[in-house]
Amino acid sequence: MNAAGEPLLVVDDDRLIVELLCDTLGDEFDVIGAASRSEVPEALRQLGRRPRYALVDLGLPPHTNGPQEGFALVRELVATDPECAVVVVSGQDELEHGKVARTLGAIDFIAKPCDPDRIREVLQSARQAVDAGTGSRQLQGNSPAMIRLRNQIRQFANASYPVLIEGESGTGKELVARQLHRASRRDGRLVAFNCAAVPATLFEAALFGARRGSYTGATADSEGFFAAADGGSLLLDEVGELPADLQPKLLRALETGEFYRVGETRARTADVRIIAATNRPLAAAVARGGFREDLYHRLGVLTLTTPPLRTLAADLLLLLEHFRRQAAGSAAAFKLTEPAQRLLDEYSFPGNVRELRNIVARLQVLHPGEEITAAELAEQLAPRSSGQERMIELAARRLADSDDDLHDLQNADRRVYAMAARRVCKSDAAAARRLGIDVTELRELCASQAEG
Image 1 (tube, rainbow, N blue to C red):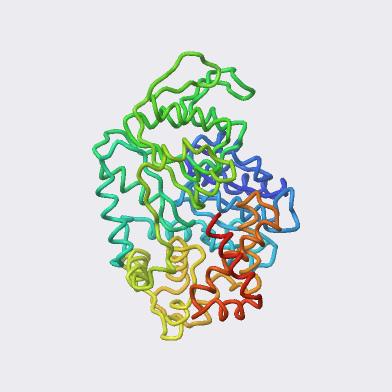
Image 2 (cartoon, rainbow, N blue to C red):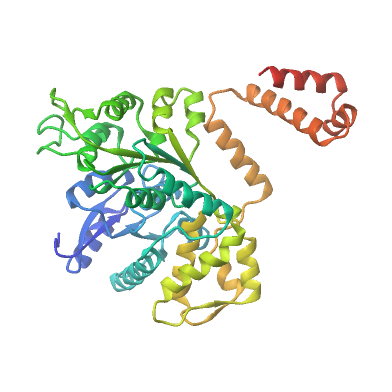
């Protein structure tokens, strides 16, 4: 590896491609390769630092015929380090899969086969785009939701309690955490730990540290993220993925400041303020027994919610201008035609502010100083889901977030719709007609919902 070069992670199930890229790009980058998503943690351990670039194939084991593993890896890399320039390199469905990967945070897409010179060109453009998009990052927006969020950050900054940040992916939870830390009087640094990106077998050692020889691969004493944040703040991103056996140990560390390295019996202490972030409501995980209730209440003494971009229509133009100025720098900025602007206004931004930032960065790299048409803009947007697909997605989320069987969920839906129909209709008879049931059944459903 070229330790003097910028760190580059290459992930492809074809080991010959990994070796070729490591060999041809090794004179310019510090390259480390992996053949699967599961090999990435060990590759990053060998690299010894966060990658500034990542080349990710979509068809990774165990699902080499589909993009699932590649998409999951893109999501993990961006969540761990939003400033990592992730580029997808794949022979799979360039148009649609490329759009989805960009929604998840990838900065560009290269179709296979490709040569190293093309990869070098794309990596340099990607780096410029990410640098432009993340420089001087502050919470932007003048909507009531954003004003309230900034006020809460100021109120919570110097409190000694943990802060729980809830919000969808791409809404700026890490940015909120960094502003919380900067506004505090803590002298130490903010250390970010992504709970979804660490294998369960290595979780405790990564968080609390380990003694040399305490497990296979522990060739030296390791400090751990908790100790590294001493005097500062520790961001536990995607805290809902915290393994069940580690939750009581984190609770103890929160309450007493004491923790144990793996392989040691002597307690260590650290003055750490915990900032936890999650893209799914922890209360649901508590209800189904997947997360300790006492830890949830300890983490959520103070809570913040980052609003999704689709609810911030008044801020969309402001954010667009902010990212466009950053991306353009001293160069001429692109412009949007009226149809393109209307298309942007109608778009739902499933990737939220992160997706908007990346769209702007790509448009500036591809079309500096040019006028962007609606067709050109549409190429950068994720494919729209049909109404049926959206319903299936919502149902899948409910099933994933609940231990109830389908019969229980259907009964719960019937009760909720009965209450909703009674609320919007003028009478019980009208509500029953709207649902296609009789009045007696409507009243029984409403009564059982009220009792539940």
